[in-house]
Image (cartoon, rainbow, N blue to C red; front, top):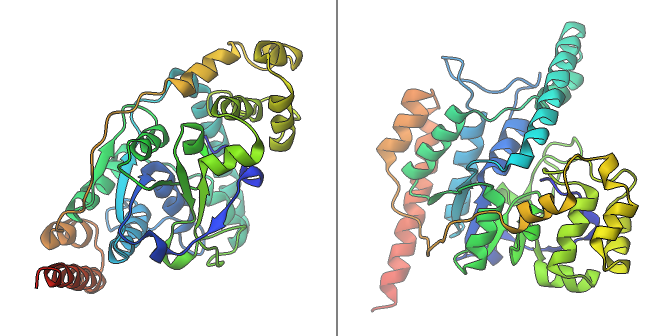
Amino acid sequence: MGLKITELLPKREITLDELNGKTIAIDASNHLYQFLTTIRGPDGALFTDRKGRVTSHLIGLFSRTSYLLQKNITPVYVFDGKPPVLKKKTFAQRKAVKTKAGRMYEKATEKGEEEEMKKYAARTSRLTPEMVEDAKELLKALGVPVFQAPSEGEAQAAGIVRDGNAFAVSSQDADSLVFGSDRLIRNLSVSGRRQARGIAGEQIPPEVIVLKEFLENCGITQEQLIILSILIGTDYNPGGIRGIGPVKALDLVKANKDFDKLFEELKWADYFDFPWREVYNTIREMPASPSKKFKSEPFSKSAVKSLLCESHGFSETRVESTLKKLEAHNKNRAQKGLGGFI
């Protein structure tokens, strides 16, 4: 949903070392789009292999996942399933935005405006089924758990946390909190750096948001959080009610108990041709499959090199270097484990 409630969140900075030994449910789509948006050439073009196939997502995925494994963090990548019916309008809006960005990119290219090219190119990012399958193949080769959601990945990731099978959801968006995740971790990137506000490599440490603290600080319930989200706008009612931001939405949900009356007074019908409760029920009843305990399996060096080096032309030297680090880490963990029986 990309819910815009950042200013309301009680954030606490953490280090990756604090996540040692923990399982993190990762919204795969959110992370792959990060890589497609930020891992590009100076002109904004995506990295591709000799056959013209995009590799930016694989570069980011291999680097980040390997690093998390070396930090003794077990990532579980959760992939989206069938989208809810109400999300169709969001897809249409996103397509229009990408189409417009594509036109602006072409104009910037004609003028040789490199910064503008990079800006608009990032807005044209598309995650194709082929990219998703490549990502799953790489993760399985690395021995990393992959979980297929029946519908929204963030809802499934939240369910995994609620089941007690992951410590937190990792995403830049706050949607998992609306779906009931106990914790959210933002900025989970290699060495605590990510691109932000247009500055590549700006230092932004990971941060954790605890749902219980968030609700208590705001003085609202989970139900009110969902109403607040609908007022601001979700993927199921894009844009929300005009003129209502997170602070005003918070005041409204705390001051009104009759939500039917609230949405009527805010003229919901002027913005959407379906009842507000349809959005509410879509969020509350989002399907999620039962989960179980996860653990990383031994990686397959041959499978990783086959996909990255042989199929996509990655540098064998660089891939081998990363795999050696993983091997050394796994060997060290095994020795420490044996030490407990000596």
